[in-house]
Image 1: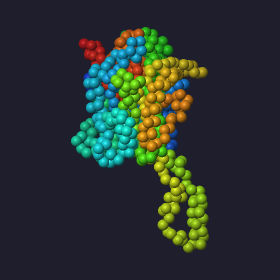
Image 2: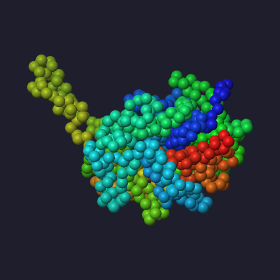
Image 3: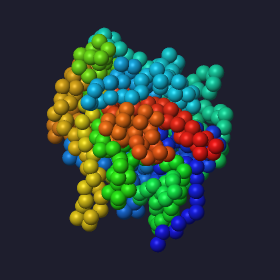
Length: 560
């Protein structure tokens, strides 16, 4: 039986990603009594797993007692990778902070219509960039200027006469006013909530699997630390089941708490205002499930619409005629911007970025490419046995080279150093639909359908640019195998609870408040009526910063 906690808050926030964390800080700063419910765990520096056995358990599947960071969703036309943990998607994203292009705020009657514009969001972009301590990759300083992947993408862009630049990154390369040096102690203005030391970027390429040095300016080091200091309660391992309007006003939230041993307990909290920030997939699923239970009967019929994968596509340039070292540096260091037909280009615009990977992946890739020489191994073993039997010793007592060839063979290990993953994203068509389906056990499951055929011209133009970049690097172009199945993997799923000017056009208004349900807000990627184009994290955070103003305004009206 549910243990109905008598906890009541001015605001309860579901999720601690770029929407939830920003909201938590802004509301706590304004004096609201705030509770954040995060399904995942807290990760301090050094907590992110690296061994195969621990990585195996680093997935989110509570039905099988897995409470890890990676949550993999698979649907008919698209798959998605999202994060579970305090800080949400910031734990596994590639740090890039790019503002949505001014002319990409589409206002298409009857289709993708953005009820906000760049001018309205710019002050919020400014505030978020400052809070996340945005820094550009210091490409003009050694040893950063030896990053071959950055130079490779720049060289290819220059030959193709494309717009290349270094975007802002949420990574600390240097302390304020100091020269960037890998591995320096970070001087924090406010001690982080983990009470652990942090160090400047060590260029290890492990951003997407969790930074064990605290170099990434993930949301737990800034917004959540500041929110907690202002009195916000952060409840981890707390998975929301559903929520409902409360009799007499406000909202009631039902959630499960997982203890470290895997036991569960059910709880209820209430709030004057509810902020749903569980991500595009999580928020849409929770809202649809709550609606299926009979709550929110007046919800807009736009629920589940405008799904977009943000045009995500990752392919590869391999066996280049130059050294690239894709594992050196943060995961992404630079970007190419391809204009849209809205601002002088052809077709739908996109961004193309160098995509790195952890350095230890090089071992797996290269050893698979170059196994040791069997004949050489046998000859070495025979010589060793012969010398041992005769007890005469080897002629050459230094056998380092022979051991090297025994383990690694004679082939050069250059596959990984000549490979560059290419990450593309852009303005795809937001025509995906999200619905609930019941499985054989009558459990609700989320289903997403997206017709990739409508986006083929966009993806073909993106692939052609990738091929051109690979060609300029003297490399072979390699498509992701999923492409041939007409499936994509979205690292940036968006939509499902789109903004609109009215209930017929969207689920929420331009301040994230759900139509017909005062005090109920949605603040994450689900509110996008279309793709962002570039990496969407900064835009999600900026929108949440804007939405917070309305939540605070509502609170002040209630107080008076």
